[in-house]
Image (cartoon, rainbow, N blue to C red; front, side, top):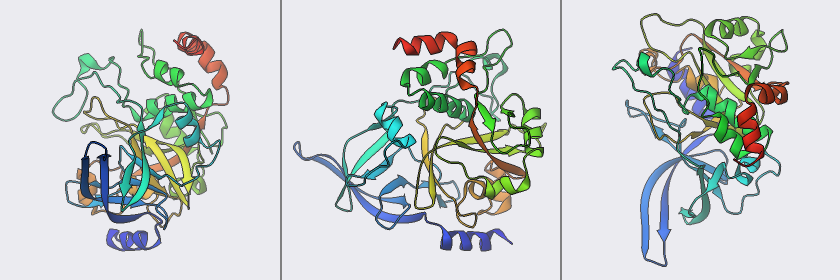
Length: 330
Protein backbone atom coordinates (compact mmCIF):
# COMPACT_ATOMS: atom_id res chain seq x y z
CA UNK A 1 0.00 0.00 0.00
CA UNK A 2 1.47 3.39 -0.94
CA UNK A 3 1.64 6.29 1.49
CA UNK A 4 -1.15 8.27 -0.20
CA UNK A 5 -3.61 5.38 0.25
CA UNK A 6 -2.50 4.91 3.88
CA UNK A 7 -2.95 8.61 4.51
CA UNK A 8 -6.45 8.62 3.00
CA UNK A 9 -7.49 5.65 5.16
CA UNK A 10 -5.90 7.14 8.29
CA UNK A 11 -7.66 10.47 7.81
CA UNK A 12 -10.97 8.68 7.33
CA UNK A 13 -10.84 6.39 10.39
CA UNK A 14 -8.85 8.61 12.76
CA UNK A 15 -10.58 10.10 15.80
CA UNK A 16 -8.09 12.98 15.55
CA UNK A 17 -9.47 15.80 13.43
CA UNK A 18 -8.07 19.18 12.44
CA UNK A 19 -10.38 22.08 13.31
CA UNK A 20 -10.06 25.74 12.37
CA UNK A 21 -10.93 27.90 15.38
CA UNK A 22 -10.78 31.39 16.81
CA UNK A 23 -8.82 31.67 20.08
CA UNK A 24 -9.43 34.62 22.41
CA UNK A 25 -6.90 35.06 25.20
CA UNK A 26 -6.04 37.78 27.69
CA UNK A 27 -7.60 40.00 30.32
CA UNK A 28 -10.95 41.57 29.46
CA UNK A 29 -10.68 43.68 32.62
CA UNK A 30 -7.63 45.43 31.15
CA UNK A 31 -9.04 45.38 27.61
CA UNK A 32 -5.99 43.37 26.63
CA UNK A 33 -7.61 40.53 24.70
CA UNK A 34 -5.86 39.00 21.70
CA UNK A 35 -7.78 37.07 19.09
CA UNK A 36 -6.24 34.79 16.48
CA UNK A 37 -7.21 32.13 13.99
CA UNK A 38 -5.57 28.74 14.56
CA UNK A 39 -5.67 25.10 13.53
CA UNK A 40 -6.04 22.70 16.45
CA UNK A 41 -6.41 18.94 16.78
CA UNK A 42 -9.50 17.48 18.42
CA UNK A 43 -10.12 13.89 19.54
CA UNK A 44 -13.92 13.89 19.86
CA UNK A 45 -16.99 15.67 18.52
CA UNK A 46 -17.47 17.80 21.65
CA UNK A 47 -13.85 19.01 21.47
CA UNK A 48 -13.22 17.98 25.07
CA UNK A 49 -9.44 18.22 24.65
CA UNK A 50 -7.46 20.06 21.99
CA UNK A 51 -3.81 20.54 21.10
CA UNK A 52 -2.07 22.82 18.62
CA UNK A 53 -1.42 21.37 15.17
CA UNK A 54 2.18 21.38 14.01
CA UNK A 55 3.26 22.34 10.52
CA UNK A 56 6.36 20.76 9.02
CA UNK A 57 8.77 22.30 6.54
CA UNK A 58 6.87 20.73 3.63
CA UNK A 59 3.76 22.66 4.68
CA UNK A 60 1.84 19.62 5.89
CA UNK A 61 0.03 19.93 9.20
CA UNK A 62 0.59 17.00 11.51
CA UNK A 63 -0.50 16.56 15.09
CA UNK A 64 2.52 15.37 16.99
CA UNK A 65 3.79 18.38 18.91
CA UNK A 66 2.04 20.93 21.13
CA UNK A 67 3.17 22.85 24.22
CA UNK A 68 -0.47 23.37 25.14
CA UNK A 69 -3.29 21.05 26.11
CA UNK A 70 -6.68 22.79 26.07
CA UNK A 71 -9.40 21.18 28.21
CA UNK A 72 -13.02 22.34 28.18
CA UNK A 73 -13.91 23.88 31.51
CA UNK A 74 -17.02 21.67 31.82
CA UNK A 75 -15.10 18.45 31.01
CA UNK A 76 -14.84 16.01 33.92
CA UNK A 77 -11.37 14.50 33.97
CA UNK A 78 -11.15 10.88 35.17
CA UNK A 79 -10.27 10.80 38.85
CA UNK A 80 -7.00 9.02 39.66
CA UNK A 81 -5.93 9.20 36.01
CA UNK A 82 -2.25 9.93 35.40
CA UNK A 83 -3.14 13.37 34.02
CA UNK A 84 -5.22 14.11 37.13
CA UNK A 85 -2.27 13.01 39.27
CA UNK A 86 0.23 15.20 37.39
CA UNK A 87 -2.12 18.19 37.66
CA UNK A 88 -2.53 17.65 41.41
CA UNK A 89 1.28 17.58 41.78
CA UNK A 90 1.64 20.78 39.71
CA UNK A 91 3.78 18.95 37.15
CA UNK A 92 1.15 19.80 34.54
CA UNK A 93 -0.09 23.29 35.43
CA UNK A 94 -3.10 25.36 34.51
CA UNK A 95 -2.55 28.65 32.71
CA UNK A 96 -4.85 31.48 31.81
CA UNK A 97 -8.38 30.53 30.61
CA UNK A 98 -9.04 30.94 26.89
CA UNK A 99 -12.10 31.09 24.68
CA UNK A 100 -12.07 28.76 21.68
CA UNK A 101 -14.94 29.51 19.32
CA UNK A 102 -16.66 31.15 22.29
CA UNK A 103 -16.33 28.09 24.59
CA UNK A 104 -14.31 28.34 27.82
CA UNK A 105 -11.17 26.20 28.06
CA UNK A 106 -8.35 25.83 30.56
CA UNK A 107 -4.89 25.86 28.97
CA UNK A 108 -2.44 23.38 30.52
CA UNK A 109 1.29 22.96 30.05
CA UNK A 110 4.34 21.38 31.64
CA UNK A 111 5.43 23.37 34.70
CA UNK A 112 8.83 24.46 33.34
CA UNK A 113 11.13 24.35 30.35
CA UNK A 114 13.71 21.57 30.11
CA UNK A 115 17.41 22.38 29.82
CA UNK A 116 20.12 21.06 27.52
CA UNK A 117 23.60 22.34 28.36
CA UNK A 118 25.35 20.49 25.54
CA UNK A 119 26.62 22.05 22.31
CA UNK A 120 26.16 20.49 18.88
CA UNK A 121 28.04 19.92 15.65
CA UNK A 122 26.53 21.10 12.35
CA UNK A 123 25.28 17.57 11.58
CA UNK A 124 23.25 17.53 14.79
CA UNK A 125 25.59 15.29 16.78
CA UNK A 126 26.65 16.28 20.30
CA UNK A 127 30.12 17.77 20.68
CA UNK A 128 32.30 15.12 22.30
CA UNK A 129 33.51 17.51 25.01
CA UNK A 130 29.89 18.08 26.14
CA UNK A 131 28.70 14.48 26.10
CA UNK A 132 28.68 14.28 29.92
CA UNK A 133 26.66 17.49 30.42
CA UNK A 134 23.08 16.96 31.46
CA UNK A 135 20.25 17.05 28.99
CA UNK A 136 16.72 17.09 30.38
CA UNK A 137 15.22 16.92 26.87
CA UNK A 138 16.26 13.31 26.27
CA UNK A 139 12.99 11.52 25.51
CA UNK A 140 13.90 8.32 27.39
CA UNK A 141 15.24 10.12 30.44
CA UNK A 142 12.17 12.35 30.53
CA UNK A 143 9.84 9.32 30.29
CA UNK A 144 11.76 7.53 33.06
CA UNK A 145 11.65 10.55 35.36
CA UNK A 146 7.98 11.33 34.76
CA UNK A 147 7.25 7.63 35.40
CA UNK A 148 9.09 7.82 38.73
CA UNK A 149 7.46 11.11 39.69
CA UNK A 150 4.03 9.67 38.95
CA UNK A 151 4.77 6.37 40.75
CA UNK A 152 5.89 8.09 43.95
CA UNK A 153 3.53 11.09 43.54
CA UNK A 154 6.47 13.47 43.85
CA UNK A 155 7.28 16.50 41.73
CA UNK A 156 10.48 16.90 43.75
CA UNK A 157 11.62 13.42 42.79
CA UNK A 158 11.06 14.12 39.10
CA UNK A 159 13.01 17.34 39.34
CA UNK A 160 15.87 15.75 41.30
CA UNK A 161 16.50 12.70 39.12
CA UNK A 162 16.14 14.41 35.73
CA UNK A 163 19.23 16.46 36.66
CA UNK A 164 21.38 13.42 37.44
CA UNK A 165 24.33 13.05 35.03
CA UNK A 166 26.57 10.00 34.50
CA UNK A 167 29.67 9.88 36.71
CA UNK A 168 32.91 7.91 36.47
CA UNK A 169 31.88 6.35 33.15
CA UNK A 170 28.70 4.96 34.74
CA UNK A 171 25.31 5.90 33.35
CA UNK A 172 22.18 6.45 35.34
CA UNK A 173 20.16 3.31 36.10
CA UNK A 174 17.29 2.67 33.63
CA UNK A 175 13.79 2.70 35.11
CA UNK A 176 11.67 1.01 32.41
CA UNK A 177 10.96 -2.60 31.46
CA UNK A 178 9.92 -3.72 27.99
CA UNK A 179 6.39 -4.99 28.60
CA UNK A 180 5.74 -7.93 26.30
CA UNK A 181 9.13 -9.63 25.90
CA UNK A 182 9.57 -13.35 26.43
CA UNK A 183 11.85 -12.52 29.36
CA UNK A 184 9.65 -10.55 31.80
CA UNK A 185 12.39 -8.31 33.22
CA UNK A 186 14.03 -6.94 30.09
CA UNK A 187 15.43 -3.53 31.08
CA UNK A 188 15.15 -0.94 28.31
CA UNK A 189 17.87 1.64 27.74
CA UNK A 190 21.03 -0.17 28.85
CA UNK A 191 22.54 0.03 25.36
CA UNK A 192 21.54 0.10 21.70
CA UNK A 193 22.51 -3.58 21.49
CA UNK A 194 20.28 -4.67 24.39
CA UNK A 195 17.44 -2.60 22.95
CA UNK A 196 17.83 -4.45 19.63
CA UNK A 197 17.68 -7.75 21.51
CA UNK A 198 14.44 -6.63 23.15
CA UNK A 199 12.94 -6.13 19.69
CA UNK A 200 13.95 -9.68 18.73
CA UNK A 201 12.40 -11.04 21.93
CA UNK A 202 9.10 -9.22 21.55
CA UNK A 203 6.38 -11.22 19.73
CA UNK A 204 5.22 -9.73 16.43
CA UNK A 205 1.65 -9.45 17.67
CA UNK A 206 2.86 -7.10 20.44
CA UNK A 207 4.83 -4.71 18.21
CA UNK A 208 4.24 -1.78 15.90
CA UNK A 209 0.53 -0.92 15.58
CA UNK A 210 -0.27 -3.62 18.13
CA UNK A 211 1.85 -1.82 20.75
CA UNK A 212 -0.76 0.27 22.59
CA UNK A 213 0.27 1.34 26.10
CA UNK A 214 -2.08 2.10 28.95
CA UNK A 215 -1.94 5.24 31.09
CA UNK A 216 1.38 5.38 32.94
CA UNK A 217 3.12 3.24 30.29
CA UNK A 218 5.12 4.39 27.27
CA UNK A 219 5.39 3.97 23.54
CA UNK A 220 8.90 3.21 22.38
CA UNK A 221 9.97 3.18 18.73
CA UNK A 222 13.43 1.69 18.17
CA UNK A 223 15.59 1.58 15.06
CA UNK A 224 16.53 -1.95 14.04
CA UNK A 225 19.93 -0.74 12.83
CA UNK A 226 21.92 2.46 13.36
CA UNK A 227 23.82 4.26 10.63
CA UNK A 228 27.58 4.66 11.13
CA UNK A 229 27.63 7.81 9.02
CA UNK A 230 24.44 9.64 10.02
CA UNK A 231 23.56 11.08 13.44
CA UNK A 232 20.10 9.58 14.03
CA UNK A 233 18.23 9.11 17.27
CA UNK A 234 18.16 5.38 18.12
CA UNK A 235 14.66 5.60 19.63
CA UNK A 236 11.83 7.88 20.63
CA UNK A 237 9.69 7.46 23.75
CA UNK A 238 6.23 8.85 24.58
CA UNK A 239 4.69 8.69 28.09
CA UNK A 240 0.90 8.10 28.10
CA UNK A 241 -0.95 10.29 30.60
CA UNK A 242 -4.57 9.96 29.46
CA UNK A 243 -6.84 8.21 26.97
CA UNK A 244 -10.18 9.34 25.58
CA UNK A 245 -12.37 8.20 22.70
CA UNK A 246 -9.84 5.70 21.40
CA UNK A 247 -6.95 8.18 21.50
CA UNK A 248 -3.86 8.11 23.73
CA UNK A 249 -2.52 11.46 24.95
CA UNK A 250 1.21 11.52 25.60
CA UNK A 251 3.75 13.89 27.10
CA UNK A 252 7.13 13.72 25.39
CA UNK A 253 10.62 15.14 25.64
CA UNK A 254 12.40 15.79 22.34
CA UNK A 255 16.14 15.32 21.99
CA UNK A 256 17.75 17.74 19.58
CA UNK A 257 19.41 21.11 19.45
CA UNK A 258 17.02 22.62 21.97
CA UNK A 259 17.53 24.40 25.28
CA UNK A 260 14.71 25.75 27.40
CA UNK A 261 12.28 23.49 25.53
CA UNK A 262 8.89 22.58 26.96
CA UNK A 263 7.71 18.94 26.69
CA UNK A 264 4.99 18.31 24.12
CA UNK A 265 1.48 16.88 24.33
CA UNK A 266 0.63 14.51 21.47
CA UNK A 267 -2.45 12.56 20.26
CA UNK A 268 -2.25 9.02 18.82
CA UNK A 269 -5.07 6.77 17.66
CA UNK A 270 -5.27 3.33 19.24
CA UNK A 271 -6.84 2.11 16.00
CA UNK A 272 -3.95 0.71 13.91
CA UNK A 273 -5.53 2.08 10.73
CA UNK A 274 -5.57 5.63 12.09
CA UNK A 275 -2.82 8.03 13.16
CA UNK A 276 -1.17 5.54 15.49
CA UNK A 277 2.17 6.23 17.19
CA UNK A 278 3.93 3.73 14.93
CA UNK A 279 2.32 5.09 11.77
CA UNK A 280 3.18 8.69 12.63
CA UNK A 281 6.77 8.11 13.77
CA UNK A 282 7.75 5.83 10.88
CA UNK A 283 6.58 8.56 8.51
CA UNK A 284 4.18 6.10 6.88
CA UNK A 285 1.75 8.91 5.98
CA UNK A 286 4.40 10.90 4.12
CA UNK A 287 6.43 10.48 0.94
CA UNK A 288 9.18 7.94 1.86
CA UNK A 289 12.02 10.18 0.64
CA UNK A 290 10.63 13.18 2.50
CA UNK A 291 10.16 11.11 5.67
CA UNK A 292 13.75 9.87 5.52
CA UNK A 293 15.15 13.38 5.03
CA UNK A 294 13.09 14.67 7.96
CA UNK A 295 14.44 12.06 10.39
CA UNK A 296 11.44 9.76 10.77
CA UNK A 297 12.02 6.21 12.02
CA UNK A 298 11.99 4.10 8.88
CA UNK A 299 13.05 0.48 9.45
CA UNK A 300 11.98 0.64 13.11
CA UNK A 301 9.68 -1.23 15.47
CA UNK A 302 7.39 0.02 18.23
CA UNK A 303 7.02 -1.66 21.63
CA UNK A 304 5.38 -0.88 24.98
CA UNK A 305 7.47 0.12 28.01
CA UNK A 306 6.37 0.10 31.64
CA UNK A 307 7.91 0.99 35.00
CA UNK A 308 10.30 -1.55 36.47
CA UNK A 309 8.74 -3.93 38.97
CA UNK A 310 11.66 -3.28 41.31
CA UNK A 311 11.49 0.51 40.99
CA UNK A 312 11.39 0.99 44.78
CA UNK A 313 14.72 -0.74 45.32
CA UNK A 314 16.21 0.90 42.21
CA UNK A 315 15.36 4.35 43.55
CA UNK A 316 16.72 3.61 47.03
CA UNK A 317 19.94 2.06 45.73
CA UNK A 318 20.82 4.05 42.61
CA UNK A 319 19.10 7.34 43.40
CA UNK A 320 19.28 7.37 47.21
CA UNK A 321 20.21 11.05 47.59
CA UNK A 322 17.62 12.25 45.09
CA UNK A 323 14.97 9.96 46.60
CA UNK A 324 15.77 11.05 50.18
CA UNK A 325 15.88 14.75 49.32
CA UNK A 326 12.51 14.46 47.57
CA UNK A 327 11.03 12.83 50.70
CA UNK A 328 12.31 15.82 52.69
CA UNK A 329 10.88 18.24 50.07
CA UNK A 330 14.40 19.36 49.13
